[in-house]
Image (cartoon, rainbow, N blue to C red; front, top):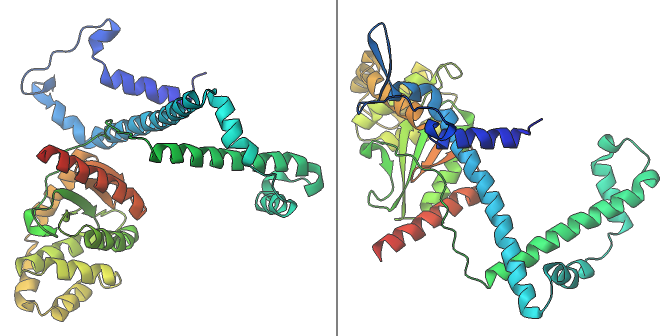
Length: 344
């Protein structure tokens, strides 16, 4: 029986290799991407994207994560082997000398604390499992100490990671960009004004723009999840009407500041609070003036594989959902370093 990981790997390989590699003739695809016809009506490769794009992006991302994990393990092993060679030891001897011999046995209080944390899973008296838990806790300490030791070796050695995560090209609206338009790194955000997770992400985005002032810009695209959030579509249209009067970001911030005011009356109240021309704003909203533009944003999100909101693409690298700032920073720092290298 194959494991899920192997199945995923086989699927990734199947996607990456041409059909001819498996002893079959590849289907004919002309220069326009025609892959089938039904009753004389053409089906093009791009027609598959709305359904497949999120799944393909997820597969490519999972493949990268698997490779990245394996690469980190291999880098750690190489660092250990290099240090061991300098000292005339094996890697195992080096770990025993520098790590395992220095890890003390856990205290009874620590073992008991660990037991209390997993008591419902163990379902046995503490004394019956104490010796096993002692070994388990010490093993965890050893694992952490090994990683700390490898990190210390890495800090003294030049390690250059050339493998890059998958990227996609994402089109965005220059009129809805926050930060320096010439900043080398771009975060494209697909968002929904009624989404609570999108609201939560605003703090992270604000902090990132402050930390990387002049080096990172944020582009906003509408991705109203209309089935889940019935007020998201009108809120998106209202933000466009505010943009028409030069106050998109002020309106954007006000909507996320209070998601209880996303009905028509609340949207009008927010417009009033921002001193918008209320007659023009209401006329714009009533006419559904920007429905087609919002639909274009949705199509762009589907095309590039946005699976929900919030969805971010940092220079085309996909970050899904509310993530720690450190995760954004790691990608941004790598992209900034790459931008510097391109100038050299």
